Length: 420
Image (cartoon, rainbow, N blue to C red; front, side):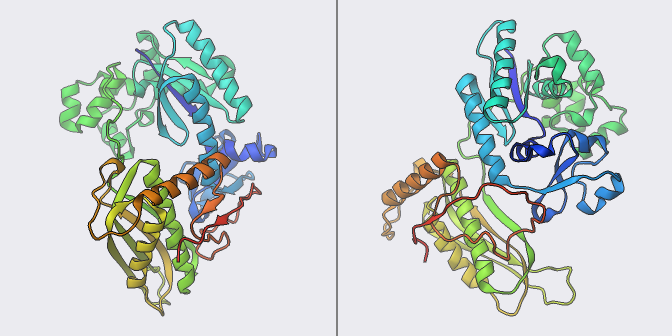
């Protein structure tokens, strides 16, 4: 059996180039919230030596060349990702979406040549229909498929964006050329620990005795090592609910003193958390809201606090979660302080198929589910948030600083007035 991995090349940068073709061929980086650090780089930026996670103020230290800096637009990236995954899901089997720009799948045919031609056509289809370049790697395990997809990226003129890593001799050659830090699941600390024992390549890790790897590190590292040998050890999770909790928070672009601004931020975070719940077919029983000032500012008093509220009946309704978030927010708000960050955390998460109703709850939950489903269907169909339960000021002072945003599509919002 072989696994395939589709990987969108330099995804955030490719999305920005889709809207602005003049960015093609020049160094481009995409920045995190508040334009703090680099979260995506074009090949040209990589060639200049700009590392991932580089703070913005250090970019000039790495290169004298002009580098285009763009603020991240994650809503746009998520919509483009959805389009890519819809194309993949229609043409391949057992699609497992791993991240916003990666997904595993199994092969539709038994014949290698037929699969290669089919996947090469799929790479061209995604490029033509969506405008995003992708690479596909094949291997006996998911960890090797990740490595194969990286090989497919390096020279698309030779690989057609598709690379097979199936033969043992080919696997051995590629693993000898792969730094151990580039292996899926090997982080910085583990890479340094392996280097202290003379393990610097993926081939050296694969050659270690499995029992030794497990005793020195962990069972997870042992599974990674066995995957490099060709043993399929990573199975898709059968868990319906992927999270024990869901949180959405932001550091504000400026210090805020006005209650309405912080309250609007909490409402937006609560709405986003509720939508994630419904996407995972889950409900939450606890809503926590926290606010925090800037502990590094000596010229203003510091304040931080949080409050947790339990829902009478676990729910994924935006209306219910926003209302409870407002109860928590009102309990912790204090005038006279400056605020730098706020967030909403949902806890006590379970599947939506096993909700225990409460005798003292008079809410019509069936009606709320129908309303939420209708709103989600409309937004999914049009690709933007055209219907929302509460006003969302795109120019609010709490918004993270995005001083490098290029023009993009705007969305029409229809307010239902459900939130009071």
